[in-house]
Structure formats: C-alpha cells, structure tokens
Length: 334
Ligand code: LMR
Image 1: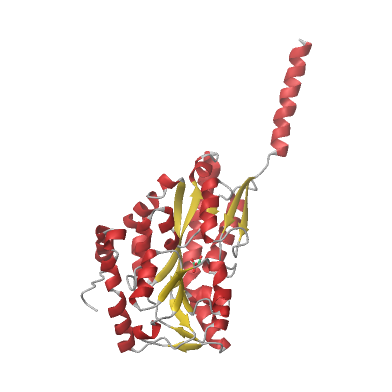
Image 2 (image 1 turned 45 degrees about the vertical axis):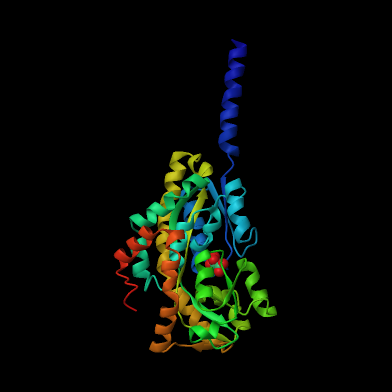
C-alpha cells in the first residue's frame, strides 16, 4: 500500500513537473534578405502570430540576412532538420531537382501581381508545391516580392547594351538563358555576396526587385537602374516535412492559421514595399533611373520571350501553356 502511494506520488510529481518545465517547440526560420523587405516583414508577422496564438508553446526564431545560412546551404539545412522553415525564391528550387518552379522566371510571363496570383492561388500553384513532398519538404504558401529591374554601370536600354556584361543571377537555368539571350554573361552567386561582387567589379550588373536593390544597397554601386519589370521574383514558404507532420495536431492547425494570415499580410505589403524602395533609390540620386521607351520595351520583349520556347523541355510545355491560358499571355503577339 505504501509503495502504491509512493508510486502515485511520483507519477503526480512527474506529471506536474512536465507541465511546468515544458519546453517550447522552436521553429528556426532562416532567410537571406533584410528585415525591412516583404519577406523579412512576413517572417516577423508569422513569428508574432504563431507565438501569440500558441500562447508560447511555439517559439519562432527568425534569422534574416543570411546570418545563419546562404542560399544553397539553407535548403540543405532544412532537409537535415537544422532549420525548420525557409522562404527561398522560386528561382532556387531547380538545384533541388524541382525544375518546374523555374517557370516563374520566364521573362515577361506575368504582367502584374494579379496575373501572377491567378497561378499562385490556383491549382497550378498548388500542384507545384506538392512536387516538393518527395524531397522531404512541405510547401505552405507563396509570398510575393515583386517585378525585377536591371542594374549595371552602363546605360542598359536595349538588348545590345547587355552584350558582354557579367550579370549576377540566382541559381536558375531560365535566368541563365535569359541573360544569354541578351548577350550577357550570367554568373550564379549567393545573394549575400552580390553587393561586394558589384562593388569590386567581379560582376557588372544584376537584376532584383527594388526592395532587394535598396535594402542591400546595391544601387550605391550601380550607375544605372533600368525599369525593365521583365520578370517576377517571389517565394515559397517551406518546412521540413517530418518536423511539421510530427507537431501536435492542435499546434499544427494553429500554425497553419498563422501562416495563412502572415501570407495575406506579406502579399498585401509587397507592392508598396517595392514602390517605396524604388522611390528611395530615386531620391538617393546614386544611380540614374532609366525608363524604357515603348520601342525599347518592345525590343527587350522580342529578345527575351523566345526564352519560353527554349526552356519548354526543361520546365514542361504543358505547364507553360496552362499559365498562358490562365493569364491570357500570347507569345505571338508582342
Ligand atoms: C536573390 O538571390 O536575388 C533573391 O532570391 C533574394 C531573395 O530572397 O529575395
């Protein structure tokens, strides 16, 4: 009887001990951009909502600016479980073996956020995220950044102006093809290295949405910024599948809700963040802003749209066609 009582006592102690000392579930969210960007702010919003709504059962540690990992390493770290959440740009999924994401890199495929969101919010976007499952990754959401501008130390208005320029790109074969179509020399490089590479002349130019151009101070080391808006850059928020599926179901549901709301927030601010960044670049007077004439725009499109056909084999003709159908893009009408 005594032994029985003692055992109950130990069990009660152990139970209450667990309740008091329960460690929070930690989600390490690593990314490569500044805090003051659509992705940086989206990550902070997810942290705030996740921590509030789980009442501290989950702690989200956000590591911005490649503090923890650079582009390529962060995906490996996610697969190994060293971090739990990332939001790489869609141009960075090719090396993982999911080439279809490079469809988002096709130049002039999307005219507006509206066109783009038809894809990311629809069945095509969802089926692309599903392709990550076999890599041990779950795709939770798409987050917008914006439309890219080109920059260099030379005035770049027409396709021929890019001839021979070393242009930094993300790790996407489509972006490689895009720069080659302009006669440029593409160079894949981690985002964290771009500012220095531009400053020291390792590369001559690059492309990025204004929010990245501004917050990484790239505009300070580029004489010209051309308002090409020739392509889109956005993200997929991804998690380690094993980790996510191993969460207590109630916690996972709460986190899914927090992600839904953080996604709405991030996508809501993306355009304004980019407009404000571009205004700040202009106001700085450090680089000359080139607005393309209708003829220059047309020449850029003529040079770049053939990249769609060139990459049909890699990305999938059906996928490209299904996007044309959804957005009404017609490559024969330029
Ligand atoms: C880049 O490498 O240029 C971008 O993918 C960075 C980012 O995450 O926006």
